[in-house]
Image (cartoon, rainbow, N blue to C red; front, top):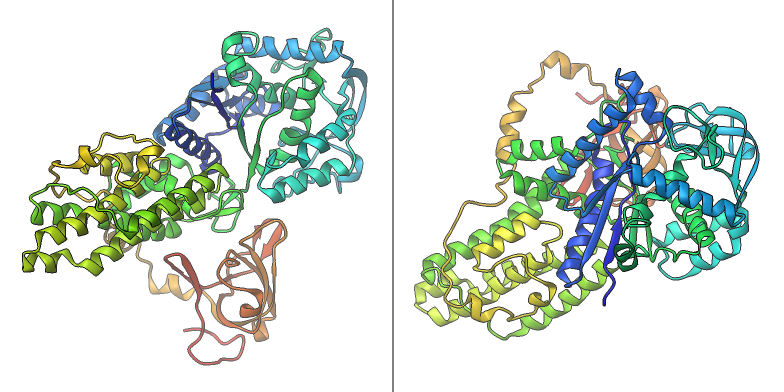
Length: 631
C-alpha cells in the first residue's frame, strides 16, 4: 500500500491576524497538495496555530481578553483566511488541544527516560518575540541578533532542563549532507554552516506561568514553546491516538517554513529530537524567503501589513472579476513573480502587471479567442486535436513541468504552462482561422482550432494547482469535467469526450485591470501644492552592491551634487547589473523620509517604471549635473 503523501506548514502564532507572508507558505503547501493529487496520490495536508507562546498570552492581555478566548477567536481568523484563499487542508491543529498536551508530555518524558534531557541552570539571553535563546557571543548591545527582529532581549537566570543537542552533531551532518534533505540548496549550506559551527545543548523549559504545557515531573516549569510546537507534526499525524493513520503518514514528505525558523529549529532541533526518539526524519525541509512590501519588511508601525483577503478584495475592486478567480490571481502572482525559495516583494503595481500580462492578455484572451471562433466558425463544435509537431513540444513541456513541480520550482512550472499558451496564440496568428473562414476551408479551421484548443486544455490542466477555479472554468467551457489528472495532460487524451461538444463565447474570466484603476486614480487626485512638496533631483549612481542575504535588493550611493551623497535601497537586482547602474543618471526623490530596509537606511528613492515583467529606471533625456532640480 502506497504511503500517504504528508505535507505540513509551520503552525502560526496567533498573536495577530494572518498576513500575506503566512498565506504564502500555506498557499505553497496547497499548490503541492493539488499537484500530488493530480499524480493520483492520496495527500494529508496539515496546518494550524501555535497558541502556547508567552507572547500570545501578552497579546491577549493587551486586548483585554483571556488567552483561551483570544486563541479561539484568532484560530478562526486563520481558518477563515485559508478558506477565503481556496486552501484545502486536511487537518488544522491547535496546540492548546488537550490531546496535543498529552503527546508533548509523553515525548518529553520519553526523552528524559532515554537520558537525552538533564537538569541544569540557565543564565543567558532570551527573545520573547522570536521565542529563542541566544548565546552570549551571539548578542551585541542586548539586542536580538535576528536582523528581522533586533528588539531588546531578556536576561534569564533560572533552574531548568536541557536537551542534549550537542550529541547529535554528526548524525545531523549526515542527514543534512543527503541530497534534497533541505531545499533550496543555499539554505542547506546555511544549516550545514550552523551545525559545523558547533552545537550546544539547548535549554527547553521556562518558569511556569498561567499559559503553556507543564513540564512532566517538575510542574514548577513549563515546556519550551519550540519543543511543544515542533511536536505538533506528530500529534496531527495521529501519534498516540490513531496508530493506523500515523503509520500511513510518517515521516513527512515535505515540510514548508520561512527561512527564519529553518536553521535553528526545523533543520537542527527537530531532527535531533526525532533521532533521540528513534523516529524517521522528514524527507524534505523547505525554507522559503520572505515577502517584503515594496522592499520593506511588513510592520504595523509602517502601515504596510497586507492581509491576504484584503488583497483579494483589491483585485476584485480593480478588475471586476469573480471572487473565485481573484483568489486564483493572488495565488498565481505570488508564485509567478518570484522563484520559490528566494526573497520576494509584494506590490499592487506588480500584481496588476502580472495579472494583465499573463492572465488577462495571455490566458484569458486565448480562451476568449478560441471560444468565439469555435462558436462562429464551427457552430460551437470542439474539433479533436490533430497529430502534428506541436504534440512533441507539448510532451517536452509536460516533462519539464513535472520535473519543476517535483523540485518545488513553482516559478519554472508556471513558465512551462504559459509556454503552451504562447504556442497556441502564435499558432492562431500563423494559421489565421478568420482568413480560412473567408476561403471556406472548414477542414483547415478544424485543424487550426483543434491544435490551439488542445494546447489550452493541457495548459489549463497544468495550471490547476495555481489557478484552481479558473482552470476548472476553462476546462468546463471546453467540455471537460475537472479536475483532471496529470496523465490527462498528454496530447490527444480525452479526444472522444471532446468530440461533438458544443461551446460558446462567455464573459471573460480575467477582465483587464486598467480601466477600473484609472477610475480609482481619478478619485485620488492631489493638488499642485501637494506635488510641489516633492523634491525631485538629478542624481548619479556612484556605487552599487547586492544587499547580503537577498537576491533582489541593491544598496546604492547616489551623488546629488550640492545636496551631498545619499544611500538608497531598491529591488532592481533582477533587472540591472551593478556595472549597468554605476555612472547612470537617475531621477531621485530627495526629501523622502529615511526608511529602514533589511537593517539598512534608505535615504530617498530612485524613480522607475514598473513595466510588465520589467523595471525601467527613469533617466534625464540629456546629461544634467547631479543635484539639478526636476520641475
